[in-house]
Structure formats: C-alpha cells, structure tokens
Image 1 (cartoon, rainbow, N blue to C red):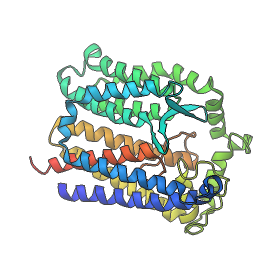
Image 2: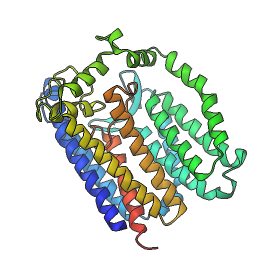
Image 3: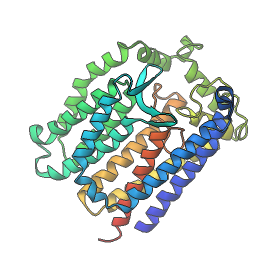
Length: 364
C-alpha cells in the first residue's frame, strides 16, 4: 500500500510537470519571441530548472529524512541570513519594486522558497523536541512564533505578503495539530488583524488589489485589468477550450500568463475539462499526501509531511482561486506547473522528501 502511494505521488507529479512544460511553452512563446527573439527562451530556462529540481529530488529521496532534524536550526539560520542579504542593494535584485531574488547571469534564486522549507523542517523538529511542553504558552508556543515572526518580517520587507500568509497558515496549522492550545492561536490571529489591515490598506498597490478584487470593473484598464483578463481567458475556453496553442489572452492581454496566471491559459486552451483535470490531479496529490502523513513511522516524519502537503496544497488553492477571481491577486505560482526556478525546485524537493517518508513507512 505504501509503495503504491509513492508511485501515485510520483506519477501525479510527473503528469503535472509535463502539463507545465507544454503550457509554459504555449503561454510564453510569443512573449518570449517579442522580448528576447527566442520563442523557446522561457521553456529552455524552465527545463534547466527542472533538471536541477530532478537532481535535488533524487538527493531528497535517498538521504534519510530524519537527518534533517540535526540540521533544522542551521538551515533556518542560513535561510534568515539569505533573507537579510537579498534586501541589500547590489546583492538582491529588484524587479517591479520587489527585492526577492539573487541573480547571476541566467541563474536566479528566491530565498523565501528555501525559508519555507527550512521553517517547516524547524517546526516539525520543534514539536518533536517540545512534545511535553507544547501546550505551554512560554515554552511551547512563543518560541516558534518568535522564529516565524522574524522570518515573515524579512519576507514582508521584500515585499511578499502572499508567501507570508501561506507560510504563517502552514506553521499555525502544524502547531495546532501538534497540540498547541487553540486560544493561543486565535488570540494571535485576532491581534494580527490590525497589522494585516495596515499592511494591506496603507500600501497603495495592495489596497488597489483589494478594491480590484471586490469590483475589477471600477478600473478595467488599470488595477482590475489582470483579474478581468484572467476571467475572460477562463470563460472563453468553454467546455473543451479553444485548442492547445490557440489562446488569445496570451497575446499581451494577460500579464504573467506563464507564471501566476498559467491556470487561466489552461482554462482558455483546454476548457473546463482541462481545469477540472488539474484540480482533480491536485486533489489526488493531497489524498496521497495524507496517506504519507498517516503512515509516517515517527513524529518528525508525520509533521514534516504535514507541513509539506499543506504548503503545496495552499499554494495550489490560492493560485487557482486568484485565477478564478475568488481571492485577491497574490504572487504565488501553481506548484509543478508555473514557470519559476526556485518554486519549481523546492516543490520537487518537497516531493522527494514525501516519497522518502513514504518509503521509510514500508519498514516498520
């Protein structure tokens, strides 16, 4: 049964990656030709990221996942140092007002993706080390909250509110399932609402995104443009779609067609059946991930698998929700499918760790 779970996880992920390869070329080829004179520009970069991801996936599968416990705190320290370095002008690269990447020639790295993995590993280790104190406020709840607070503060400075919301949700859910008292978490959430309000409504572009989400037609050529074009893409696909490669919205109407809004292009070219197929694949992935969690042979494996499945699930839900207009615009890619170096690599590393945990479960 566990072997079947590993095969299912791997098979579903391969299908999603293959869909991503096809759709990245379909959605980016014209834009790549216009900007770089090479219609394969983004596809070639994506394949290079995929090759690196496969290497790290293999390493994550063969290294005993329990060894991550020994390095959880050093990994977290490295992640925090990288998050600080990326904010320094001349070291981190600024794109459209956001400083989230290290880049050298064609190589780019987004440290927040590494921070996601490092913090999930740290939290899984913490709940194992402090199992008898996890219900305490000072010794069980505040330490991981201080670590989470420092991490999300650095990510907010990039700025990247979408990653902060996803990462915070994952860590809080892990702690709640570990036994942290619900009133502590509820108090933290309620006390964070004023700060969240200020983060959203004191920043013009975030406030504009919320207003565009509530009614994109108030500014159809400005802040509402992306949401409207995304919905046009999905709606014009109908049941069967326009056909692979025949999207109209990718012709410079829908920004970020090969990254954050690739689901919209799938809806336009492959129709309702295509988008439902993607959703079903993610649902099966989550189901198989839950089996890995259930069959984990130790507490660390249980919470590590839980955190990884939650992160991939939340990213998929938020990305699809944004494309459909159910959530305000966030900069989160669709796991395994969207173009993006660091996100793809760390999604594949997460897959490798999940398969590793499932494999260990074969030998009680």
